[in-house]
Amino acid sequence: MKKVAVIMGSDSDLPKVQPAIDQLRAFGVPVEAHVFSAHRTPEQAIAFSKNAAENGFGVMIAAAGKAAHLGGVLAANTILPVIGIPIKASALEGMDALLSTVQMPAGIPVATVAIDGAKNAAILAVQMLAIDDAKLADKLMEMRRQMTQEVIEKDKNLKY
Image (cartoon, rainbow, N blue to C red; front, side, top):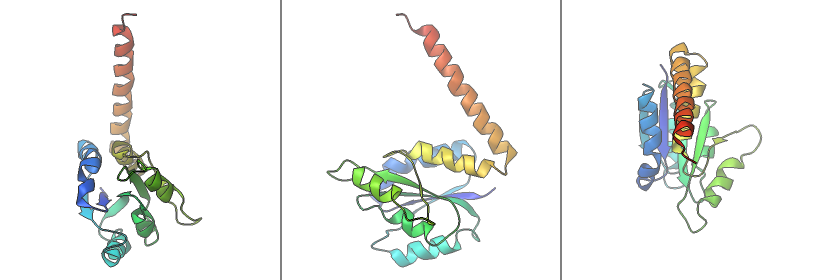
């Protein structure tokens, strides 16, 4: 099974990306987490991205706040899918990171989830891997069935 890389721009982002790591592990997907900065360690970020496919990765998740260039730097150096998590890290409440992550030029896409949307980033990564992995697809379907059942139960328990 291909691995998922969870790359954060700063170790201070770890509490925000931990739900992605946890969700990937819950699906049994191998995950590696790293800290690379688009601005402070661009050479390391580029080298990681350029070698990601040959190192067994299938998807990369990039979490960054403020200018949030990390996802773009990774995407510019690989053909693997990159999912951006804009992190709320400034007075702009993550809108700066959201706009930086989502406004990629044609030809270098970064799929973008909600501000601090780590869990959805992980689920999207699993969906990408599940295209060629029937066991992962079954796990996703089971998750959806459980979510449906939870809502049905909540409706039954509603007393109004």
